[in-house]
Structure formats: structure tokens, C-alpha cells
Length: 194
Image (cartoon, rainbow, N blue to C red):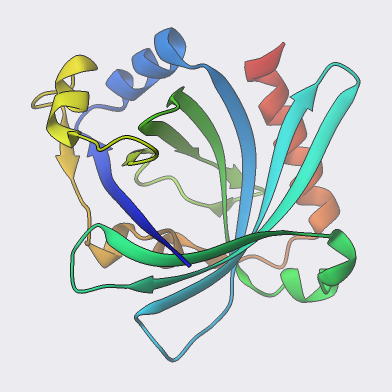
């Protein structure tokens, strides 16, 4: 079990997010995250499909994660592992809460990403359109300094700990097939990797 230390931000103006994405993105990842229902509000369990564009096509990686809130806002205990598609009940994904996004990686350590939320066939998120996350990795992170370096002082709002902006809270049941989700994400993802 590891400790995840991150902060989340939304943009006052989506055009600012678009500009950062255009000028600072190192690479992009297509993501679909399915959430398991739980009666324990301090625990979140999810299955994530990560799609990477490679020279020969797309690579799909599946990740299972369970996260537990701690008494400190912005810090959670996390158990994360790669899993094989064969270990997933594909049919059950169709009826789970899900969120779709393109993740624009801006920096690796600390990890700074801007998630662009998507709608597939009318299902998904449009508000907020973008969310930025800064996560401490190997080195200690000065979150405020990272914001200054990106020129985002006064242009973003810290929503860390606000359950309204948790991916689980943003997720919805859609009934969409895995095939449709992958098809959409790969098409959309290709726009950023051409």
C-alpha cells in the first residue's frame, strides 16, 4: 500500500486549460474508469483502461486500484496493480459508473496532468470540461510553486477534498459497450497523437 499525495484544480476559463494542453503536453493517454459501488464512502475501487498510441497501433493496459481516504485532505492510501483483461467481467462494466477522459501529461515529477472529460453518445461529463491534478512522485512537491511555474496563479481553483469533483462523483452509468468506448477513445485520442 502506498500513499497518494495530490491536489486537484478546476479552471476558471477552459481556454486556459486548452492553451496549457497545446503548449505543454508531453504525451496523452485515453482513459475510461469504471467504479464499483460501495457503502463505505471513505473507500473507492475502480478499474481503469489506459490507451496508448504506438507506432504499430494502440496498446491497452488495465489497472485496478482501491483508494482509502485519510484524515489529511489530499492524501489517500492506495493499492494499485496491473491486471489482465481475462480477469475482468466485461459484461459487468456496461452497468458500472464510468468516466471517460483524455489525460494530457504536462510533467512527470511531480506528475502534472490535465484531464479533458468526454461525452460518448451523450453520456459523460461536460462540467467541468477540464481538471488538473498535481501528484507528488519521487521528490517532495511544492504545489503552489508548480502552479506559479505554469503561470496559473489566480486562473485555477483548488478543489482537493471536494467530493463533488471526485471522479467517482462525476461518473455515471451509461450502458455503453466496451467496444464502443474503445472505438470512441481511440478515434478521439488519435487527434492528439497524429
